[in-house]
Length: 332
Image 1 (spheres, rainbow, N blue to C red):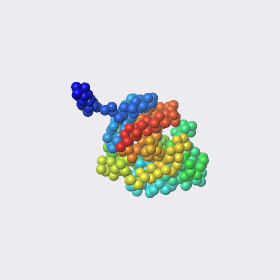
Image 2: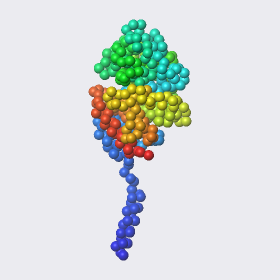
Image 3: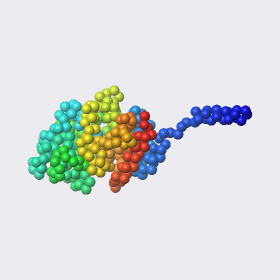
Image 4: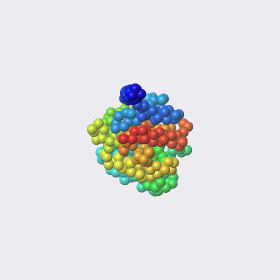
């Protein structure tokens, strides 16, 4: 009887101990895995709009702008969508040569260039030879970036395979500038920065003054997370319509396919499945990333060392594994 009594008392106090001892945080394994990724500077995870992980290992932190590299393409796509919503542009089917006007060279361009649309440029299906990778240096050292892109050899038809090229998205920035009469920085601040209440500092411009379309924008991780939330919430933020839900659907609809990962690509967004969840992401050199997982109500931002050399595909696989772990840890 005494033994039973002692057992009962022990069980009672063990139950009390379990009630008053906090559980191990669900993000412990996520943070441990993140800290093993050498180049990673910060990790910010929101679920249902609330931060559940805030990790800073290096870089400017969560509140100061960082170079988001080619995640800029994802932001640029939103500007194109807002321009269509506002009637500045008509549709993704609008031909770029009509928008660019006298920016189009008189000679040296292939006949198919006239068939390239805004949508082709956003999905990097212009058919023009890339300006990225080994071609990048020559392009950004040229006297006219737009003319250089448009006079590249055609290596596929417009609307054909995805050819990763920041030159294609720079054409979008030039088209936005020509159609609106405002530079891309002014549009970004007016259409995104002000309504989202985020700071968008100036970034690199080409020799003609066009802001770099698709690279070198600077946003803080918190600002980039707000942008991801805008898409996760269907184009509304803080009760305000900023971007149409129709544009988000079009942006998340596959057009081409990445030759490196096999993931689909829409308008500025890669489209894939991670941990059995539909996932949409923008990716930048060095390990910059924005991942939106609507079914899990997750928005994930990563910043990393943006300096060469590139860590390559193996590094991105580590980031993808980290996203998979986050999805598993925070499944509803």
